[in-house]
Image (cartoon, rainbow, N blue to C red; front, side):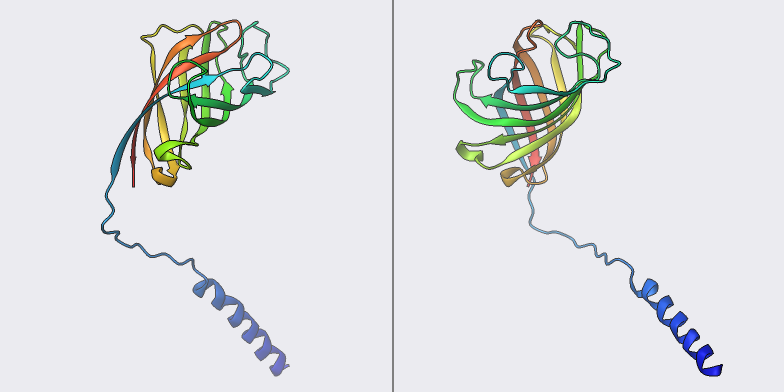
Length: 194
């Protein structure tokens, strides 16, 4: 009996030690020599949900959503692979693409509001292979916004030349079609990165 009791105490002791020594490892280190850079970019973004070769497609829509006959009914989830170009025309030189998801949030059929996650990746030029991530709410705007309407969105990360990016993007519609949902936007980006 005494041997069994000793064995039981030894087992309890062995099982109690790992939680004490099994704590996660953490060490804060000061980084030296890292200089934060500021980069400004200007390009055009084309969201094309219509036609034979759409760049945005509907993934899901709630079956309780009322049909407002709008291009983006409330609670619709979209996937996108939209081209980025140098100029406002869709035929301008392509420099990359924006891939991601957005969900339409406006119950008003005359307004567009969404939460957008997109990775803006560059495929040519100085920033080839680099990207930044935008995760923000696109504020309520008319489906055919005025050229004076500017939307500010948050940049939350990046890779390549834009490692650890933070900043903002200012979007302004250069053209839009309320019936098809097609839109082209001028994008002015300010990035802070290492």
